[in-house]
Length: 127
Image (cartoon, rainbow, N blue to C red; front, side, top):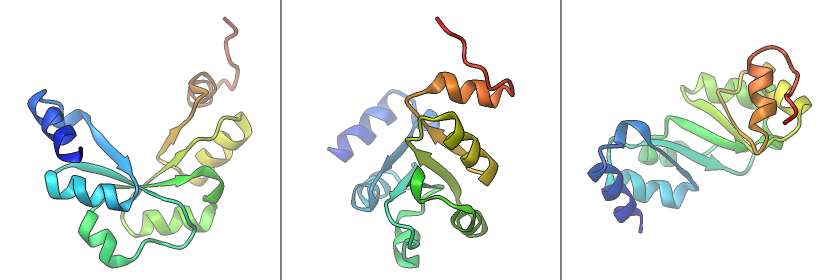
């Protein structure tokens, strides 16, 4: 399945607009199928991924469940040369905290809230 997805992305000319995210086993398969793929490897514990795994997957991003991220983890991820993404905070307070920690990307179900925070007004338009 991974090979087919990577092939479709390539056939559509979308390689520069796609990044892949999943756990380590799937990302190893993506890396094997496309050595140049942009990868956000999902990690589900506060303990860091092993160096050998990181060397094999070569992710650009480490993708954590938002509740695992604190200042020490954010600093470690950045110090180790990775971008930090989180999933799936849906409250303004949590998104504000993660932005203050220096998280590089937030995946949320509340894009309106995130955009309002990004734009600096904190207010959310009501449809």
